[in-house]
Length: 113
Image 1: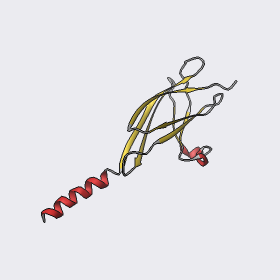
Image 2: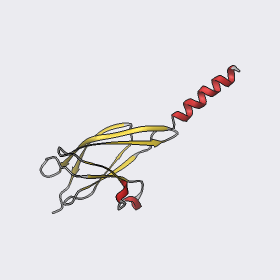
Image 3: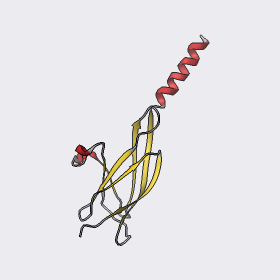
Image 4: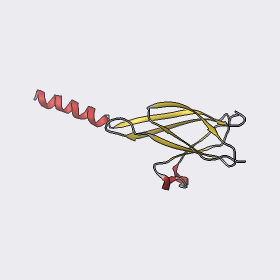
């Protein structure tokens, strides 16, 4: 009976460790002026086929150019990386990859000339 109880605890701990909550927050700046950029669409992208998928939009930057993305993901040996793309008319798309649980990023968008 004692082994069964111990095994149950280990099994529950293992199953609950398969999910992790990852958070990325920060600011978006115009690379040439250093000013905040609002209204930037943020998409979670798993592969290149997702780039044009409008349903993958998971956020938009605030008037002050800030953003916060929370993503629940699963991973047996840790959290998988998150790939985010930032889109705004008049700027080149920008990609960031984050691998940790909580990350703060400053994203610089390059204006199209």
